[in-house]
Length: 254
Ligand SMILES: Nc1ncnc2c1ncn2[C@@H]1O[C@H](COP(=O)(O)OP(=O)(O)O)[C@@H](O)[C@H]1O
Ligand SMILES: [Mg+2]
Image 1: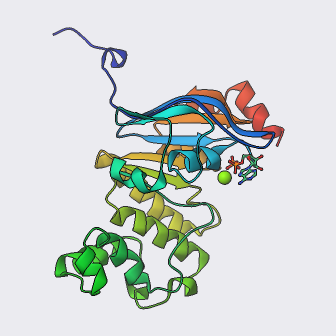
Image 2 (image 1 turned 180 degrees about the vertical axis):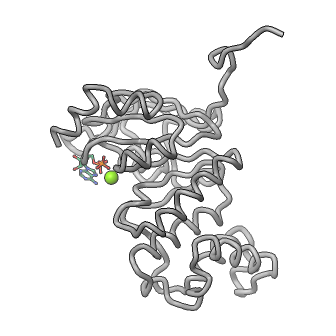
């Protein structure tokens, strides 16, 4: 058999971004960005503060309308991404500033995701044994099962970040957009999140990870995109990209 190199294979694609523009008045947060994100891989998005990372994720998840350009999910091209449609493309996300149902119990934060499409279940607050079992499994995974009867607002910052990740897992999505999940949390919690990212990859899921810690990027990511002022500065394998002169300079200039 002929010896095929990696480049001979057609790589499965999760998301294609072409000429994406998002501006706030005169500030071009994302400025004509074109990137292709491979399916089943962990892709890092790095760049100095204000380089457009969160805006990119907001545009991809339909939180912000796109000003120009287009996006494709699994081969479907869209010039408008609507947040209520995004989950039907198998996409879920977490927020840099953690968003939960604060006045709900930790357990209910998960159950409401698991039963979202089961109208009668949510109406009568009856959860099947299956949903409860799955919620337990997910909460144990993030070490929050013991906290299940607490209100989400009473958790520590790190626990809140873990609960948000648990909610994303409950979505059972194909594509996970994580905006700085490791920022400001203890090492033990970071280890759990790193393990979850690796597990998602093993399951063939696509993970997009915004992260400032370059050691984590090297450890977890197959590919990395470096943004600077809303534009693509560099891309490739982390170990090669992160030592490029222009990348080092972009960070030094911060
Ligand atoms: N809602 C908004 N209104 C006005 N300007 C914004 C808004 N969101 C982001 N920006 C601006 O867009 C640029 C990119 O921000 P952001 O995407 O949050 O960067 P990053 O996540 O890389 O730190 C910054 O200059 C920021 O001030
Ligand atoms: Mg950000």
